[in-house]
Amino acid sequence: MNCTEELLQQCQMLIQRAQSVCVLTGAGVSKASGIPTFRDKDGLWNSMRPEELASMDGFLRNPELVWEWYTSRKLVLTKVNPNAAHEALVRLENSNKDFVLITQNVDGLHARAGNKRILELHGNIERSFCVECHIFYNDVFFDKIKRILPKCIACGGRVRPDVVWFGEMLPQDVLDQAINAAQRCDIFLSIGTSALVYPAAELPYYVSRSDATLIEINPERTSLSGSVDYYLQGHAEVILPRLCPDR
Ligand code: NAD
Ligand code: ZN
Image (cartoon, rainbow, N blue to C red; front, side, top):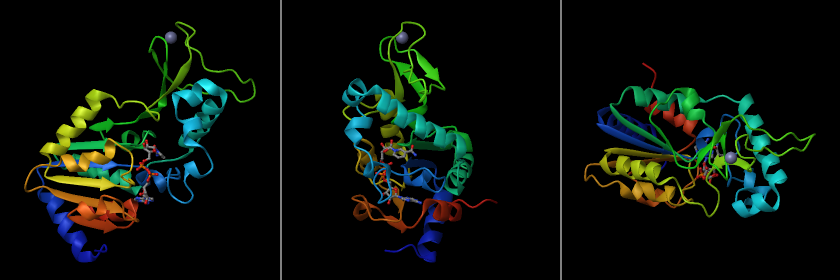
């Protein structure tokens, strides 16, 4: 099924009538803001090796390389803004009493756009923490010229970005809240995610109300596409404003 006008209207009506809305977003939602995804043809993993950059082993082996990569991603964030997809999700939250936005993105753009009920499954790149004493820090950068690694002011321990790396567990309380939101919603929207990273990819399968509707928005089909009620093929920044119009 392609994304026809008729499908869009049906989904818009279902969303308007919904009592409880749960949204899962991935890197595709931020692409129009200028942040590359990981797995597209021009994505980040094409030039980098994930296990070198996003794992504790990689960090211990080469913390300078890891910090250089995260610092460059953080600098990108200072130059970009939320796009029409983020803005539409703010309208959706404002028009629904029971709304939860689960995101795999670490860019903080949903919060910057104005969403409030956000569950960040994979952390937030703006935050860092000390691996020894777990104090949190904001605005930690690696100085490329002086090559001084960020250190904990309290204990001198290594400071790392507060993102979930390969082989690490997701924060359990956040995951529990996400599962709960999926179980009670009557509309679940999966937007801009390749549906490959677990356990996030499992969330749509927790939707358990018999009257619930599963909608996916993605320009490419994913492993989820065959299981949804509506697959809306296209870009989030184009389709979402039509589903959640500004009135
Ligand atoms: P992914 O890179 O695996 O997949 C991106 C998906 O977005 C693809 O299915 C692609 O077809 C789709 N897409 C591309 N352009 C789109 C658009 N304009 N509108 C809608 N969809 C579009 O990303 P993922 O599924 O989020 O998983 C990647 C992991 O990488 C996550 O764990 C996440 O934490 C991390 N990540 C985060 C960011 C970010 O914070 N912005 C960026 C890259 C990766
Ligand atoms: Zn410390």
